[in-house]
Length: 397
Image: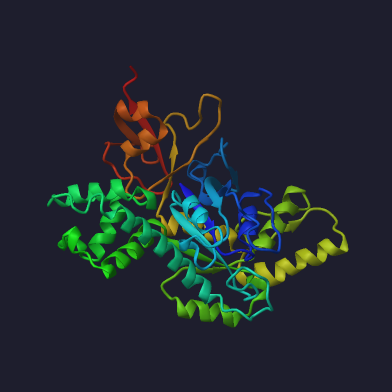
């Protein structure tokens, strides 16, 4: 799974990425600071299965605090997008190519209205952030449209009537947009375009399809950044204008500050919480900075928003579930690590899918599985639930 962090230059996109991953990237007050994409690991919160068994887990990847498991996900921070990117303006072509494999997008906007359409700093509240929401979706839709029309001739004249064969032809020739066959099927079905022959598609059909397949394959959550210096009215208006979109207020710089302070053992802070604890004396500047974050960010918004955005991107948008490998007789691995792994699985995953995710041999030699919590035997088609603990029984050849 990969989550793309996108937006125009100078809105705090790279700050958001750094706050999520604690990877230092160049952050300057001018456009196109990010040229090559930055990749790193962020974490999503899951109530750990160790609580059910009244034990303490020992994760091999990620970490666990007070029975809250932080599970790794890959993030990619790409070059800033400007209007006209789909035509190659700015670093548009590169930006869009870098996003090809992303499962979902976090669109960082400047809620304070202090960054214009080109990514240049301007007076606060002199630009409407709603324009950024519209332009980014438009540019990605146009990018999709360009790829679709460029490749259409490769399969549009194939004389097939069966839907499955049509779908296979589309999926193979439209791989450049990073959409699965299922996502393409949903987009075409939503528009009722299966009823038309490929050769009969009109311009509006192409445009509607590009938008629909983008919505299916690249769902977008809006990170309304710099919320602490923006007016409450701006956020309210933005949500009223786009009631169908998930818009979450955030302060990426506050999250980054808290995580760095925790790393330096100045405070204790659990990402996603609405408070922190000081553990040693601070100088006046540190006191004022942390006091500002507590009152203007954590108390006002219930957190910095960064963790909430990551969690909702994975669990609310992509509907992934967290599944733990384990055994009825033993929850630990050969090295004594209790519940060492937690895997994020797509919706409707089965025990067989989980077995293959763990190892190809487990999937190919699958016999049955055991729901460790209930100790019940389940078959290969058993659909998994969030926070299941599963033991795979397989033929050890």
